[in-house]
Length: 273
Length: 286
Image 1: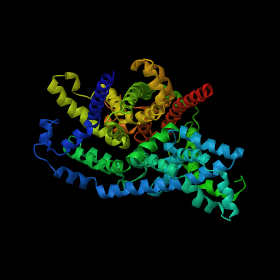
Image 2: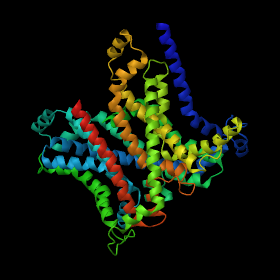
Image 3: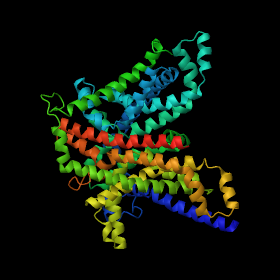
């Protein structure tokens, strides 16, 4: 009996490893071929490169204006997510502490807004922001607050059920105003959900392509946007395109390496709720 | 905090403004414009249902809807199959389960645009070479026909999102009491019986969540469509989201594209509301 179980566990392990290999195969093929010359790719994509060609990466790095795109991506994602966390946590708190019908209605509106797909508001949105001369990074960050706040408020609102009202009362008696009460006492208690909200929004905003493509000029392009232009420039030149793709995903892999546990937990929490 | 308390309003003003300006107002404007000849800047007249009548007769739009529905059904089935299979593997007591979770989940962190480009290389060059090697003609010329483009998109999406669905199933699988499984083992239940009678019923809620999540995500896919097939050949693999973007920003038919966007909203909303209905019903049963 024991032996049989060990055997079945072993075959599951083998199956898992095979699937794991299948899952990373695309990344392996991307990296290996990014090191090849154009001729080398033409003669076969499965093997290792004859000579390891680092020049592909140098050229892709320059053509992607990688440092600049990275900077743009970091600024836009960082500022948007920071603002989403600040304002959504405040709103989630206010809505959870006010039990009136009106407060319930507002919460319903925020949740219902999640039903609306981006394409359904995209055209008037771009028109309105265009007429207000706000098709720029600041406008984009504001848009991310609008699109990101619904889910974030929903998550904060849910987390507030675990924060006792007596804390509010005690702080008010001690003479704190609402603002101090929230930032000094409530917000630190919401830290776990802030991590979840932060991770979910970073993943989405960092990778977003369509909205920045409608809002930002090429000079202010984020990584996905720049990648799109870059790829168009190098069709049929896989060695350069693949080197560019490899460079573009390095920041994500580094982030994943350091925050793996939090990312998987955050995503799990966001999905199951 | 009372409705009249200034703090209540102070805390809510930023998000009310943002949601209002970014989502609510454009949505209402959009509904209105879809009944006019709006060109992105101004509307001169009401045209009633003209756009809506036209779009149901437009071949390209209807094709994109059917293509999207077929794509969504295929993706939902494959995603849930792989998601559950991966979850069952990595929740067993194997040495590599953490490493495997990391690997399976990784594609979710990378944008659909970049993944689509990587898979373009896989389908065109790698499949071509492997086809040569094995002498399989069917592996050559991928993405150049509607059929292979369709399966290309399904494979890409399944590979990308299976790890995400896996995470959802893991959350439920790990909540199954170990004693239950042990007791069944002692009673002599086979591993298939244990799966059918214990594991499966207890992860059924995860199935509902995953199904609707994957359904609504597959309906809204844009990036992968753009980077993998770009709608080709001859717009035959173009999904609804992409069709709307093209009508608006390539063909410059703003109010017509907006009418399509309204229909798109209705489809997505029906899917989501069905989910809410099912969840409510399930909660009552429990």
